[in-house]
Structures are given as structure tokens and as C-alpha cells.
Image (cartoon, rainbow, N blue to C red; front, side, top):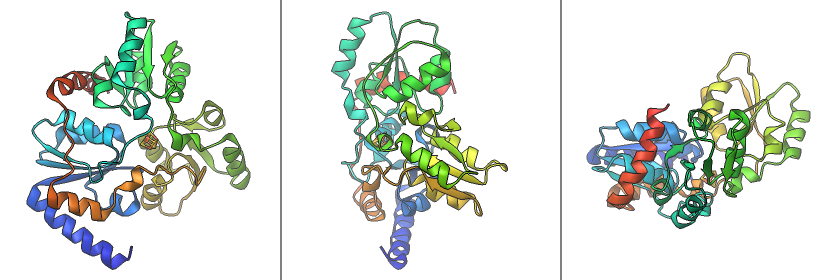
Length: 305
Ligand code: SF4
């Protein structure tokens, strides 16, 4: 897309945003031009907190379906737009509310901790939500030897190792982070021997074992800003490099694997944001009975961070 067309679209979006009293939230994995058009760019925890505090009447969520649902859970009186209703998360779709209910029946005394990458219906069956930024803290604070963790087995494994707790894991995973392989990290280290290596806890354990740190995307942004970090290999969705380069001129960032692209995150475009604000669709809603139960799990997370 040409810069001229981007600029025209951006102007149209700004105008519509004002007319609708809207705020635009963008995940760190969104296209660069979408990040540049947003009011806030962040990870799912930061965006949940922004969504909970905003005075805007309309929230345009540039991310995937579960993120827009979380914004709808926290903002019942507001309109939440997801510019492409087909932007889903394969990991979130790896568990249904019915499957979680069956797991709970097998372990009736267990506390259920659910990664925010899940549907509202699954959150509604949970005691706590967590993100990759606060999962260790949330699980560490639970005084129950039986904990069910869904849906990401790798984040769950990472949290279990960090907290020393035994978690019953669900076999979900992120197909994008699965594309980062141990040999990619080994190769990047050979190419950039002075670089530090950070990876996301959604990566496979054998990838995490090769990194200096496993961090959420907000943790990576803070790590990259450290004065002692000049070169960084980054093991997460590649578009985070847009923000890292923008905020850290002069530093060098390398994608651990250029194959780590989330096709769902790329479904949101400037055209679709403009159209969504124009038509006020697709709006994401959550049935009130599910919303209230899901909100209790999200509120327990927000109270603990
Ligand atoms: S990067 Fe992975 S977890 Fe995140 S939205 Fe894409 S598929 Fe889901």
C-alpha cells in the first residue's frame, strides 16, 4: 500500500474516530501501519487495562477475537469493534467450555487458571485469568495443590517450572510460536554472538531453555530498552520488531524465526479499521450471563497485578 493511500486512510480514521468518540487499541503483533494509527499499542494485559479505563464510547480492537471479547467483558456499555470478525486465535479455539467443564468434573477441588487467550465462555468456567506477563504471579499466589491450567501447555509448563507447582495442563499451543525451533535460536546466536536472546513463554520448552529470558511482549519491550542491551534476538511474532526498532533507534533486533507470523493478527488493515468505524461493525458482544462470570475471572487477575 502506498504511503499516500496510508495517509489518506489514516486521516479518514482520525476523523471517524473523533465523530464516534472511539479509541483504537493495537496488539504488539499488528501490522506496523496499524500500530502507528492506534492510540495505544501493547500486550493483552496492557490492552485489557486500557479497555477497562477508557472513557471512549467505542473501542476498536486491532487484535484477535478473544481480545475484543475481553474488552466487551470489561466494558458492557460500550461498542467493541473487531475490524475483521474472522481474526480468531487457533490456540483459544483448542478448548471449549464443555471440555473445561468435563475436566473440572474430574478434578472438582481444583482451581482453574485460564490464559487470557481463550473464549469468554471458557473464561466464564474459570477461577482466574492470567496473561504471559502475570501468570507466574497469579499461579504463585494460589493456595491449592490442584490447579488446572488451560489452554497453553507451554505457558503452563513455564509457569509450573517458575513456581515449583504441579499444574494439570491442557494440550493447547500457539501455532505461530511453535514455528520457532531450537535450531533457529542456535543459528541466530552463531550469527549474532553478542546479542541477548529473549523468547515468549508460548515457545516450546527446548526453545525457552536456549534463551536468556522468557518474557511477555511487554517484558520484551522493557528488556530492549535497557542500556546494556544493544543487540537482541527476539523469539515471538515478527511484527514486534516494528515497535522495538521505532522505540530503540541505533539498536539491532533480529527475529528468531521469520516464519513466526500470526496470519490472524494480519487480518486487520487500515481499510478495515476505516470501514468498521464507518459501519460500526463487526461489533463483538458477550451474553450477559457469560460476561458476568468471565468478568469475575478477569477481575481476579486485574486485582492481583
Ligand atoms: S500469536 Fe498465537 S496465541 Fe497469539 S493470536 Fe496468533 S495464534 Fe493466537
